[in-house]
Image (tube, rainbow, N blue to C red; front, top):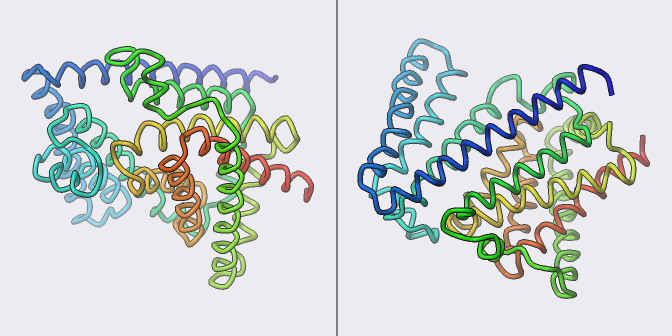
Length: 321
């Protein structure tokens, strides 16, 4: 392992540790705000002050012709501040199972919508369009995948209350993580097949709209997975995405924010990689299949389907290359 790779891995570990510490602090704060008025007001200041400043700055930048940065600040600012309005939370509670009076749910919603604004704005940026330049796409490594999975899994547990208001067993149950049985595995396999059908249909539509798009997207995936295009690498990549991402999006978020909003965030998380094009519709469809597995089976089924979907993709690319 060369010095640059070691330095990059250390940087990733430091960033991951910082992120988890921040999540622990925010979860503690949100839990305290459930019964502490001053802590609840503090949450309004935490999200409202930067969110309000972003809204003002975003509007000013748009007026002055800076569409890229202006859109970014405006969308993130809206995401952070809209959940602070109680009528907004009440309205959303009509279509998703969140508690409009919960400081924890308000905090989670601000983070989810703020992140959705960030990734959407980056996906709309010209450099991310139809699709982005392959030379700008970094290849993932095994250490990065392991750290990513660990961080996502840790954040999922923190988001549902571990170690504050749930113990490890309660948090695992809340996340919908179970030991897989025959039904879980069977439905996960069916979900994997459904995901490939949706992705295939999306690819066909993309090919009809833009014949060069499919080839470009394959090149992007090939570039991102260049270091893990072998059986072991494919398993690690699949497990990393399946365990980590599903723990957060389906395990932690879906029971509070429904199927659609976490799936939108999941889709736009990949937007800067693939660009804002019809391929994202296919990714949203795949995400909704995973959401159905979570709703009607458990998160473990979604994890297995996601892991198999990614692993098979990587193995197919390794055979083609």
